[in-house]
Amino acid sequence: MEIGIIGLPQSGKSTLFEIMTGLKSREMHGEACVRGFASVPDPRFERLVEIFDPVKVSPARIPFSDVTATGEKAWNAVRQSLSGADGIVHIVDAFTALDLAEVPNRYRKLADELILSDLMIVENRMERLAKTAKKPMTPQDALHAAVLPGLLEQLNRGKPLRELPLSDEEKHGLRSFSFWTIRPELVVVNTPEDDPSIADAFLKSLGSDVPGIGICCEIEAELISLPSGERAEFLQSLGITEAAFGRVIKAAFSLLGQISYFTVGEDEVKAWVIPAGTRAPRAAGVIHNDFERGFIKAEIAGYDDFIACGGSYAGVKSQGKLRLEGKEYIVQDGEIINFRFNV
Image (cartoon, rainbow, N blue to C red; front, side, top):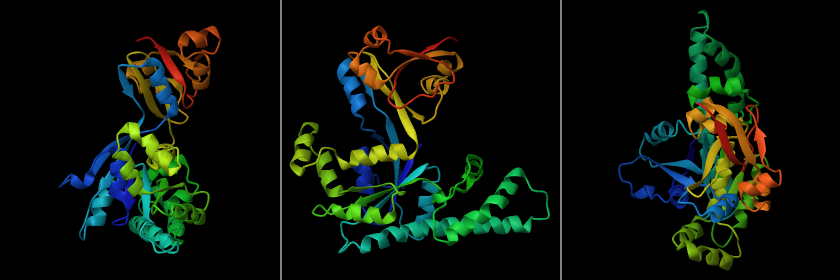
């Protein structure tokens, strides 16, 4: 799981990375690609930490990557460094725009580059398939021959591949191409301090299907530089309740279809990250392979029930809110779980 941050030069790409991860990528000389983790803000997790006051605290985290590349081969460096990214954050410079009309052009400039890059890959692959048309096809070649014409048509229309209704099998068969536009995208609009509404206007023009968030990186950088105790007061002075960079992190987390469940105790409160739709044994396996191999049952309490019952297992047990679930159970976001296993 990894999110790559992309953007035109001077868009605020590296600043956003630094705000979210705490790593100053621009100071890491010689590193073309810098990877760092951002903690996912979650009031539920913070409340559990308050209740248990554990020795160790382990929130859900999501990795972000920032690529610094210049020169003629800059694009190749970006592609190579982010080839394994599962999603992208596309940051758009609106803070230097003289009017709203400039912002879509800045977004389209990079978006069109990504489409063109994918188009060249599709055309090259189709040419190679055409040259070997008389030879017996492998299953992968057959899948490519069936799917690529549709991809070509979509890209020629200037549309990203993520909008196509591809099956899981087709997506898996296309993974080796590392297409840019097949990956989910979160649009982040870097706004001027005095006109945050420019983000809403631009994002509305993209349509409701495109996830996006407005953020003023200048303000957020100032916020993150403050001691933690002063941040709430700073936000209050601006008339807002939540830092925008936290919303970006949460949106990126959701973009990849991830959820988290919690294990709690005085030794540690931890958020475990799993894909949505994960069954209980596989969810147990992220803790340790033995948990999955010897899975018996999952003791589960919903977060709201846990809090309503005094924030303890004893409370949820006494009020009949603790459930025992088996191998077919699909873990839900925010559940508090204790796994029973035997190996």
